[in-house]
Length: 120
Image (cartoon, rainbow, N blue to C red; front, side, top):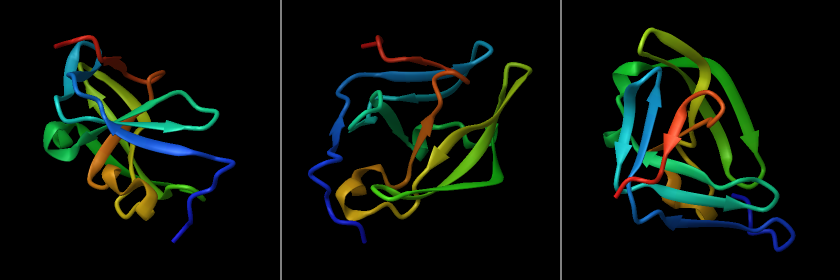
């Protein structure tokens, strides 16, 4: 397992509000239990619990990535509202201990879907 790196800080915190993810006007995720991951040099990323994600709108792909700070990520294509966004969602099934709070959570690329965190 990776150790915390003081030169590359990562922090995971509960969001505390509502996060909705839509594609072409159709809701694919809606959660009040999202985690926010803050990683050095990157914008914050919302990770939503799988039970709050319309997994029937996601199709697993063969795409995989490895992050030396979080672990191995698997990806899904999102299909909703008549549109498709390839590899637009990802998850760390077995993340490193330093980011264990994002296990069983799904994140979405904000340039592929709409993410609204303004709801109460």
